[in-house]
Image (cartoon, rainbow, N blue to C red; front, side, top):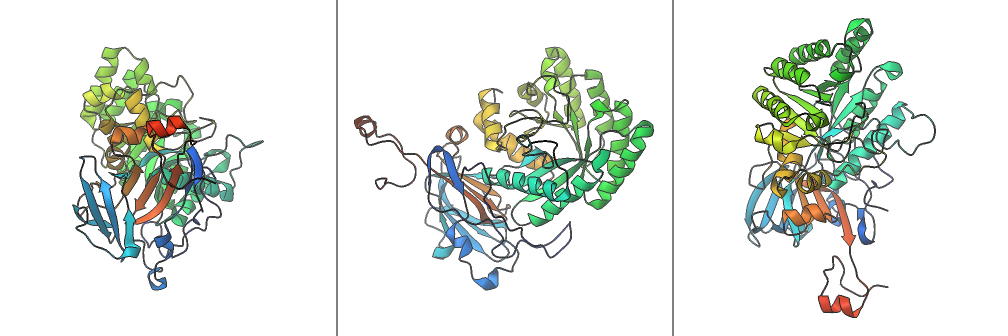
Length: 464
């Protein structure tokens, strides 16, 4: 099975509490482990390590990471150090030199040859429409189908390293609140594996037609949508749309995350003026239209967004179906960063009407920002990790004692190499390994391969 597909069957974990709190999954609720290795550099298998399935049965009913101590041994950090990292209670308990932090053998993961990083997060997904590009006939929006798609997409992104996902969900029209209810159910079923939050996305909020949309938006927030979204560009009254969103967000204390192409500097100026005082904050994206504006106009708009504290989420891997496609240029990330705008990067459409392909891979987004956006490797990775987590209201993660154990180990020794060839990965959420992708590269036994000592990953014994 390709590493781009979550494993089947998947048995959703059970939660003992409601939407805003609760425990991790019971033992045995994670995807089944795969056997063996995939051949070639572009294929792998995503599975859980053996020690996760060998835990004492009495511990299986505890919250994920609640009482388990896990040692990550021999990990390389971006500063070049090789360290051991001990995790407990969902947090990093200690970081020490290699060999200085003993732990029971069954609670040890050997990270020799891996670079250990704060886990990325996905700030702009569309779980309700994901994985629909290859279907025949109209897309089904039955609750079961939407929940299945949202769950599968979140697991795919988890396998790539994203331990938190913000999913924009369309509400209204003929489907009403059904998709939102289904994605919220996916969120509950995934508790302990990944943190899935939802953005309610109405189409219209002004005029007679918008009255129903506004009422439905209020209901979506009451149901459990934690972020208010939408696309002012598509409303006949963009300013009125924004006013309605900001008023409701202020009333409920919700963040705002809006779709906009960003090609209208006057509209961006009004947005910045109106959104500046809102806490916990406003994000907009994908803002590809900013790249089509004259440089001085775009710079002025960036300054206004920075002054208002508005974040920008770009989509370097493609567009999303929420906007009319006017070009696939990515937001000018260097210009925005130079003005002080906090820039994050998301995956956007995932094999749906907005993008027939798509990997949902935050490391690919960082790679594109480095290769095409002009960012250094560290800056590019920050856009999918620290900046993304901040935009999503998540706690900061560092590979230091006391910080949340949200980590990603990728085979490689430098960040630039990891962003280039990130095949083998180990994903840690709330202090336990929740996904593992292993890839093996082998070359035939030729004189050239032997003479050049070409690198191999994985097994060293002769192949079959």
